[in-house]
Length: 198
Image 1 (tube, rainbow, N blue to C red):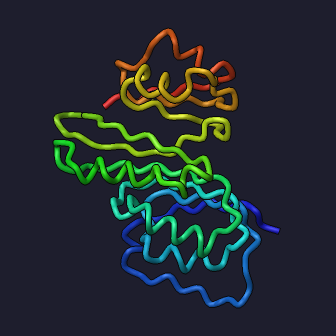
Image 2 (image 1 turned 180 degrees about the vertical axis):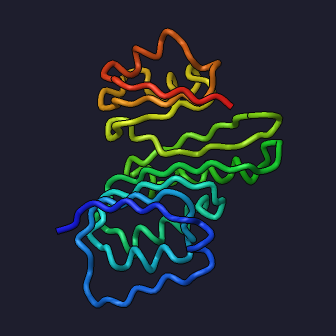
């Protein structure tokens, strides 16, 4: 019985074609990973066939995913057993932080998210004169890999000062300036490191 499913596809193909599922049975999948783009309007159709989902992992740069109210409705309607909500959004908006961005991250701090212990970090990064924002979920004790964005001291100390991320085995570092001798204190069991500079 299939419990784990990872989907990777051409984003243009899915955008142009409808998501037709013509089965009368539900899938026993409990862990779903979707890489690349997936039209959020079609997500409800897919989720309606996997009601046992316990873990959902996404990586996207589609700003339509940044609506916490939409996610709350999807979770309550289609994912009653969801325990791990592992999402990373990376997108390129205006160069300056605006009030919409600030309101958006605050919207992910309502009682709905806090009760489930789903916390998010919002950072502003820059690469080649372009600014982009990264919003990602932080449940470090559940992760096998972890990506560091921006300033390690600011993000890590405020959130994980008293709790090393023991489950992490693979660390991704996105910017040179965050490399610090203190990294080893946060990831004592890491055995793999990937460096990526823009």
